[in-house]
Length: 183
Image (cartoon, rainbow, N blue to C red):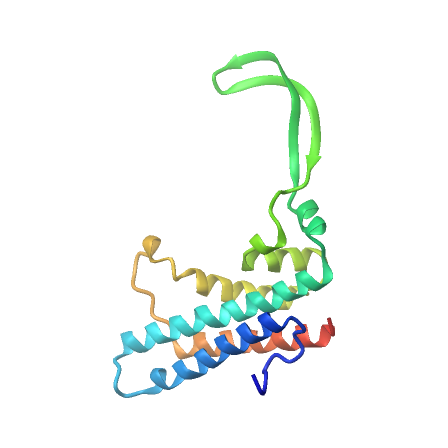
């Protein structure tokens, strides 16, 4: 690719995927403004653009995780406590037992590559890489993107021009944030 909108991303494959997705979004934008489509169709195009823009945000944030943290860092963060050598001391009823054992902290088996947008944003926020404002902005986009899961919706969700503008604003903020990190 001759020019990249994401030249600051050092991973060539990721950079190419980001540019490809960005160009796809640019290709979809004229459909949203076209008079050839009704409001429902335009909303569907906006939804597609929101999903793709969220994937760019997710990829940029994943790039931060990949560059700043190891798989071990992520495994420790998402680890949990496991009860080993468990012994039942007393059975109260079918729902209650008194037990004893060793409580041992185990690292998660999930690698960085398995993280979703919510997990990535939360990880970076809790590691003090993302501030509260950008974290909240990302969560707004994440919630909009999650509306793609139509099985639980009670109404047909219409995506507005305002939704799209907000998502673009967040994407711009995330892009600036990642670029300024100089990874």
